[in-house]
Length: 136
Ligand SMILES: [Zn+2]
Image 1 (spheres, rainbow, N blue to C red):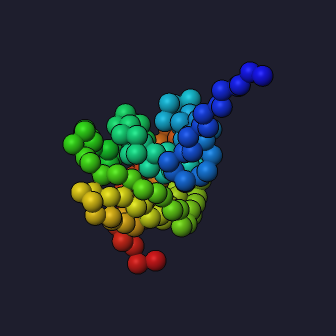
Image 2 (cartoon, helix red, strand yellow):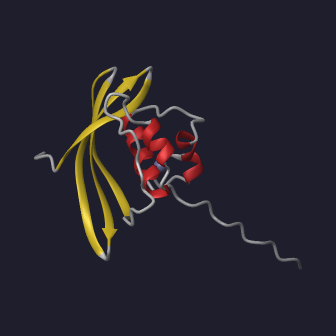
């Protein structure tokens, strides 16, 4: 009897969706697929932080608020997980997403609470800015 190699399971997407990365944020990061909602875009940006995909982080930033450059090479944050609490769409082109991201720096665990604002720019959802530690 011949043994079949066990297929390596596809890694789960870092955004916590429980879908494989290839069926979740990867096509958005690669530009193969547009984020259908602001929440999907927000998840893809979290995944981009995990994968240090600076290209996608800048590409998914509104041209009005995008930083000139972003350097994550020296950033030793280890992202531990994402929880999306609320996704509210104000109208066709404006939405907010409230979330908590957990990460570790230098052995200490931190939580980032943020309410991010998203807009459609040229038909695509992009990140505008965020308010940290929102009251609600
Ligand atoms: Zn994902």
